[in-house]
Length: 273
Image (cartoon, rainbow, N blue to C red; front, side, top):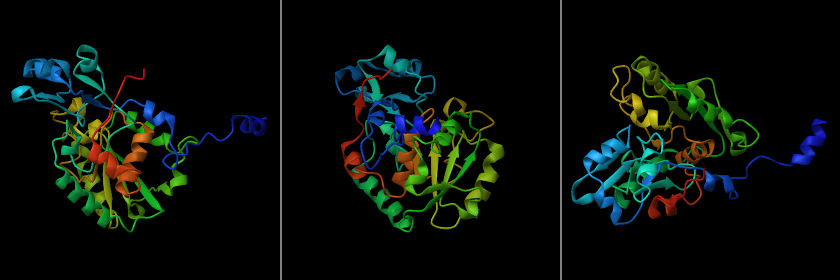
């Protein structure tokens, strides 16, 4: 019966990134600022009221920016001001710099190129066999479900030559989730120090990037950036499996069209719900 069901369903494993996958475009990303004059009407008071995580900033001369690294994707701002805010296109927007998560873009192409070049030089040795170590540094568990999904038949991370390992001594990439609980600071450092060079650290999810709603809590360090040197910042609450795959491929310079996407900036899509 199972053999017949398998023949009837066919191959379910995504062919992304070798081939396009319609689901990647339909996945809702973090909030972004829509082009147009309506953004000039947002002041500091309204910005604070629109975002419980404090990810919206209103500056002088009507400049409004969204820190996607702090966005918890609640959608409150999109619902209240659809003329100003919308959803990013695609599964997520991993960035090689923390400033790169602030939209509209606040970093220069030159600084981004420099960061990209340095990471590419470090990870040149990581080809088709990459081992991953995951550490929970105070997560609510949502990111862990998405990471576990990478092992199912749909995403099948092994097809990309990526494998999870139980030992940091065998790991090339460290995936860190959670808001950076103070009790996990030393275990994180020990894990990082045990990894061989070259090694890459990816902050997975809004909590790992900024601390999320726990930012400012006595129990957290407001993300993992103050504990470890982060190479790839991945927003999302939680980020989808496709977004995590994007971050992994970006880390080892295997993300298709990354240079063009970096130059073009973040796209905007409607709410797919």
